[in-house]
Image 1 (cartoon, one colour):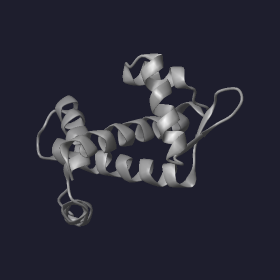
Image 2 (image 1 turned 180 degrees about the vertical axis):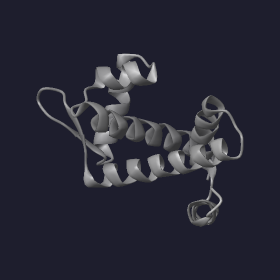
Image 3 (image 1 turned 120 degrees about the vertical axis):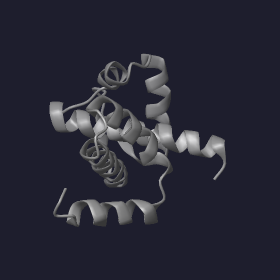
Image 4 (image 1 turned 30 degrees about the horizontal axis):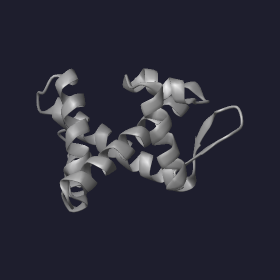
Length: 129
């Protein structure tokens, strides 16, 4: 995967994860909520929302409320699971919560599926966790 493609996928995944977390906490989500949560400008978020709509990951109603499609929800849940497990693992081995959350966000996009599944099996099934 090229660096440019990877950066685009990472941004897309960050948006989907943020939408999912906001929907879980607030119920309904608008672009301004995403902009505030991610500390991005509204125009930047609007461009990204258009991209996510075109890729079939979100829908937006007439009032501007954003919903994840089934494909968008699945991808967001996958990213959130990676983030949560990686952050928990880092915290468990002694990394501060703040650093663990930041590092998990970086790792979640680059880690292969094979490595993540191995980490997940080892971490979740390890009784000394």
